[in-house]
Image (cartoon, rainbow, N blue to C red; front, side, top):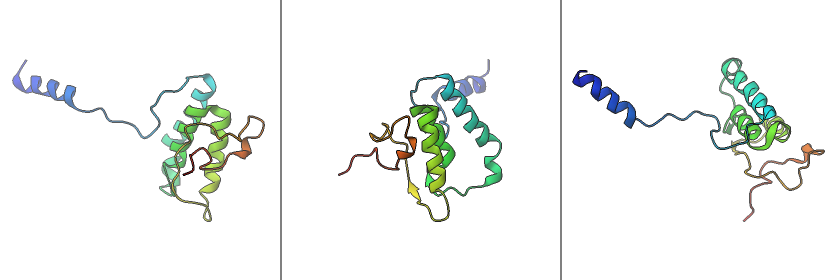
Length: 124
């Protein structure tokens, strides 16, 4: 092998891995979560380019949905995503809106509409 090839191999090992836009943390890989995340990823790869960069929140609605489904499952994460998309309207909010680490205490499986943005964050 030549010197140039050896240098390229060394550079590949030292180069930091690029992280994707979507959630890469630990989560239970259940079938419903994988299906929900797959549908969101399919949207990101196909239709998202036609919609344009019009999301007023950070992370974007599709990234929020991906992470919400990964962390909280298809049912609760799906409802969180629906309400997040509803907040993206012309008279909605904007700014930093991360996925809560824990499910809000008032949210139950039979009342998912009780989710409110920021209700999982501690008040100070």
